[in-house]
Length: 538
Image (cartoon, rainbow, N blue to C red):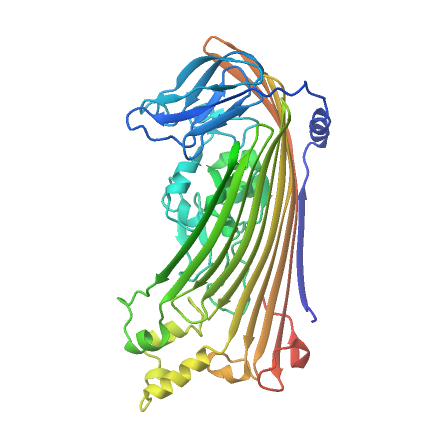
């Protein structure tokens, strides 16, 4: 295969290398011997008795804490013996304190029943900060979706999850075709030529957010979503930063906002297994269909099946969450299919009392089959519904229409996506007043698009002798992020902290494309058998 047109873009940014080196060196400092004491319990609503997932629990004047799971349970591991004040908080509830005594190598239980209070709006966020902060302490606007909202939402993708949940933002579904992406806008137009798509981070690693790569041959709404490669069930929480604050924290490319996704790393305890089977049907909406021929010959009942499973658990030294899924979906139109396989794993380890290491990795394979759609000239649905003479001219019989429909369905449009992302974050808290965090990771995404127009498909193309078009894209980004925080002792009602750090990332975005026309024999779909080989116009 010969690639005629090659466009490549390589960009990179590296800031404050000295600080980064200092952060790496600091992580090598040895820590005290391991201590096996832990604190556990449940957090519930005092009125209803229902568990409160995503509630925060922490030891006062320390950096130790945890968040409750979907059952309201929490576990704080590796706590040195001594007397502590344990604080539990949740958005919309009064915070609650409890004095506890931790004994070496024993488990201390502390349960909480929180009462509702409209004034207690103290969400904990980390986006754009060197450490966890209460939302009211931030000078920026950060919205948070917690695990409870994620698990209760009956949605299959992240863009559907965000729809209607971002104040001042919009999520527009581009197409009803399986696997297609959405247009996410967190604020108004920020530039005449820059992308309006938010920057996306997964576990602190910058990832691909391109939503515009497609074939140049006017195939219609052929876009996949880089955001939807992650299962909603694998997400622990989502943090969203809007406005000019995003540019200050993440650079000029983040002027359209930032979406931070944090995946699950498991909870301590015996292994918990989950297996889920989803199957369903999609009935086409016929209310606005004018022609009976469209309903009878083109539309069909779509089918959806998804199989997913996960396991999580762990000890006080390590927790884990591993999941996988397989998806097969057929839409309500012919050649409207989506097949997907994915695997994701998360790990959280505590090698010493003061060190925490998070590791996450994901692998995704997607295959799409499409037809000309949306505003494409050869869109069969639009052609029929516009009462085109090809289908409804004088003396055109039903058999003629069906033969013409077969010609419209001859083109082959396929889209393949392979993606791998990996990230690791090491946190070292040498004291209750000093904490450091180092994140390293990468994201690789390869997209292959292919459009084949057989010789017999002249009804839908002006390309003589058939045509073959292919566009490939390879995206790689590497992220290095260091942050440190110095906290000063509380002086009455005044608290203060100094945050410092640096972030560097390197992106490689390479696109190749080729077109071939004038095949010698029907059914030929190889570039070497084409009379004309030329770059695509762009």
